[in-house]
Every structure is written in C-alpha cells, then in structure tokens.
Image (cartoon, rainbow, N blue to C red; front, top):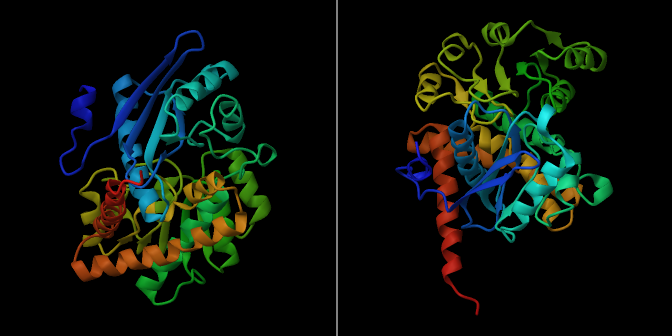
Length: 360
C-alpha cells in the first residue's frame, strides 16, 4: 500500500505530513509522521525497531502518530500529535552518527515536531539527538531534561485505575483488589509499587529474569506467574497490560476474568471489535491513550522548563479525565474508547479553530 492510500483514513482528516529520512553512511532509515498540529507542534516519541518491512514501519508510525494527537488533546496539552520510527535493530544499528543524523532531520522541520523516547530509545539517546536539534524532550537531568518519563506514566496509569475502580466498585482505591500486571519494565515496576502501597494484592509476570529478580527483592509479597496466559486466566479483579500492544485479542479476552482493564501498553486492542467483546463480558476498558499520558505530560513540561511537582499534578488529573470519559460513555451508551475519541476530537476542533484568528 502506498503512502497516500495509507493516510487516506475515512472518518479522520488524515495526516498533515509524513517525512522519510535516510542517511546511507550511518544506516539511518526513519519515518516521521505528523498527524495534527491543530493544538500546537506535534509531540511524540521515536521508536527504534526492526520492522519486517518498510510497509510495517509506515503503518506503525501512522497509527502511533494519530494516537498521540488524541492522547495530547485529552492530556490538555497545547500540542499536536506526531511520532517517528527508525527502521532497524537498535542493538546492531544504533550509533552516535545515526542519532545525530536523525536529529538533523528533526531540526529541519523547524519545530513542527518534538521528539522523545519510545521503544528502543532512551534518555541517553535523546541527549545525543539534542546535539543536533532543539526540538527534543525526555533528556537527562544533567542536560536540562526531566529524566525518566516512565515515573509519571505509571502514576497516570494508577490514577486511571483508581477512577475505574470508583466506577465499578464505588471507591477510588485498589486496596483489597487483586491486580494482574503483565510486564515489569520501565513502567510496570513503578505501577507495581503504587499498587502495593495502595494495599492491592499484585500478581505479575515478565519474561526478563532481571525484572523477576527486582520484584522478588523489592516486593516479595507480589506473586509471580509463568506467563501472560496464566496471568489473564487467573482470578484477578484488574488486568494491567504494561508490555507490547495487542494485549487484548481474540485469545486473551474470552478467558479474561478481570472486571477492569487499565494498563500502560499502547494500542492494547488488537482490533476494533475487541472492545465490544469486553463490554459484552462486563469488563470495563479504560482507553490506553488516556491513562498512559503521564509520560507525555512529563516530557511536554520540559518545553516550558521542567517542574516535577507541576507535571505530577497534571498527571494526577488523569483521574478526573478518566472519570469524565466513563460517565460520558454511560450517558451516551457508547464504549469508553468512543467517548474518549469524542472528547479529544471536540477539543481539537474547538481549540484548533482558533488558529484561523490571525494575530498579525
């Protein structure tokens, strides 16, 4: 499928800009997708991943950049949505030259797109990219950045989970609830800590032996299970997918015993019909791009001069946003994801139209 066909999305305005970037000497092959700048410059991370094909890389960046527009709108940021992918294995291809070459492509967009960390890229990489561009967030504290954005990502997911608990059980706490966390990576480990401190009984799984060792040493009361299949089928109240996308699919949802799904992973719904299956089974799904917005709130705060307390307060408001979405979903008789989309689209339309008022 060609680029224009890929961006011809019925029901949306399509992407504003898709930029292909190549530096043969360093091996850089990247795609930057800008979905919308209605609310401001596009913000979204850079994913470094060994896609099977160029078509797969393009499809991912288009999907992710659209998702960032909605996420940033619901996070009440004055920022649009964008994303970038670097095609290749970061373990083999990542180098200073490649990252700096990529940074120059970001700079060439003159502030239409701000980048940040994502799968396969880290704070140290942002510091390297920043040697070539002003339009990068998620830098290290030593270089004037906010550092690890997974801290506030986990905090926001926890707030969304509290709102879901209130909606289902009448009280905004996970105390006494059994929560299954799939993935103890950068976000999952912080979320586990919040849950334990709130009095939840946590069951977790991760394929990484180091993550397993961490949870045994830090939270010995957490129960570890062999894999995600075992976790999903276990007797849990809340399921928190915190690893790869597509966690809610035709294999997992039919056996899922939880009443609430709230997790940090992006693109949790394997296909559009899955949310209806969840609803038919009486399972409340909180849209991932709503509850995992704490990270983008943190990196966005860097643009105006990072203040952790201010950013954490903004991330705490994910509780209120989630509550509003769940109430709207009930009032309008639609799934939460549809309600969330409507709120995001409303803000992009209402605030975005102000750009037609010319200041000079």
